[in-house]
Length: 281
Image 1 (cartoon, rainbow, N blue to C red):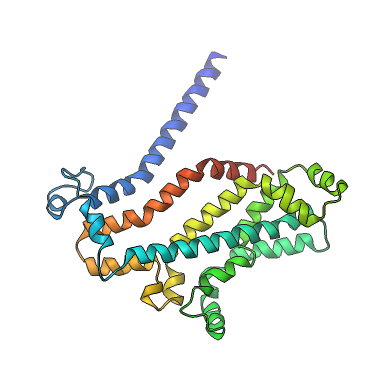
Image 2: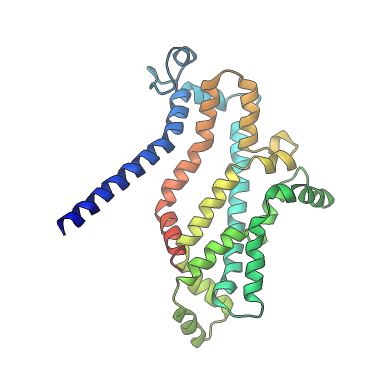
């Protein structure tokens, strides 16, 4: 028994060491980005990337924000608007599509779900040109419609699958009790199932918001007006203008990344719970 207990403690110690090493490896790039963003040009030239700056240059962020050629405050508003709209559409429609797959019975249910999952095997690059032709035919080029409207048509196979798995973890007796009280499927979905699915909704919301916030190809392809561009495209433009001023480029990168870090810490509890409970079935 003592040997087994000792082996268990050793395994836990090794696991924690591996996890800490992995976490440290993930944090090093963020640390380097932050240290470079807070350095002056002279400090950057006379120190290593890992060395903490001798004098914190908070003015680098102000220099980036007040640049007349690249308007980061405008890009923040544009990106936030698109991300909020897309997240709302994906969260609502993925839950709507997942509900009948998880809680209802109808002909062809398994075949339809298999067909839905098969779309995950289709690379986005394959549909890029057909989508552009379609949106050009609809006169949606240089508008936000190609970036926002598709989010309200199902939310994507992965999000539907995630919501479906979470709905499986909710007891079926709740649906039956609601039906005995005279509730329709729509009422059961909105009043019973959806309020219990907050962890899964938060998980889908975080994934979608982060993906939309970091989207580069979509705005680059569909948006031509510089006043409508988003942060990722603006950051690439600023990188071209800043040239070798890496402290300013890193300051801009910190500002682009910071909202995502704040979002994760605010929703971490729901995010982890949603991932865990979606894997129960």
